[in-house]
Length: 64
Image 1 (cartoon, rainbow, N blue to C red):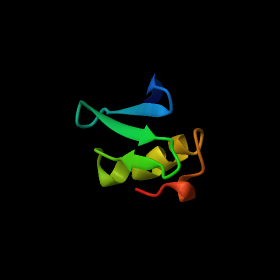
Image 2: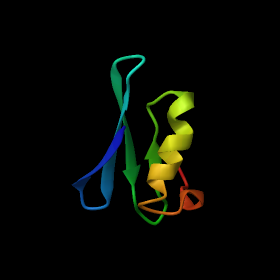
Image 3: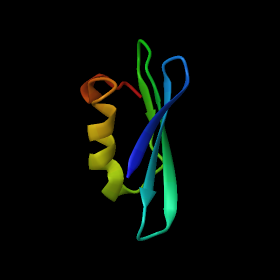
């Protein structure tokens, strides 16, 4: 289960809860001229993260 929160203009926190670890991971997306994705989750959650990021911007445009 994931949620998207815009915490500042064009800055998003994507929170993903992983039940098997009983942990919540937060990723941060900065939508700018050169978008930044700060991924703090596990490798297994990355495909889900890309799907969620696609709701905000095209993942292939992420520069950093």
